[in-house]
Image (cartoon, rainbow, N blue to C red; front, side, top):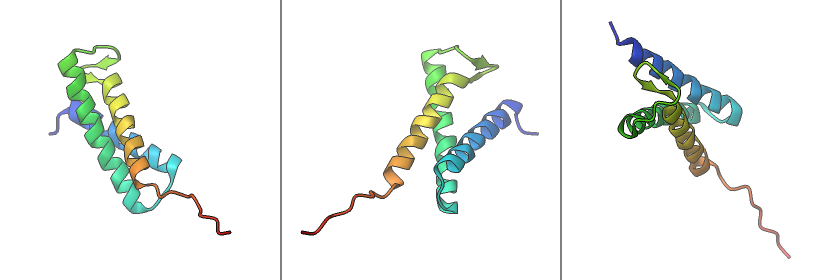
Length: 92
């Protein structure tokens, strides 16, 4: 049986990635990218919160604030590097 803390973090990070995909749109490939990026960012934020002992909004052993912030920072970064520029060149 999986650890409930792991399942909670996994579900929360997945919801972050799917919610971001709904807000930003894109293909199924981008959805997979956003969900994966959210997982990595959430895990990285969890380790940062544990290392820096940030206990604000802590649920059990999950450091919710740093994990959420890091997940969204990673999601925004992934969105920025995968968005094509919409600038047009005008001819004279």
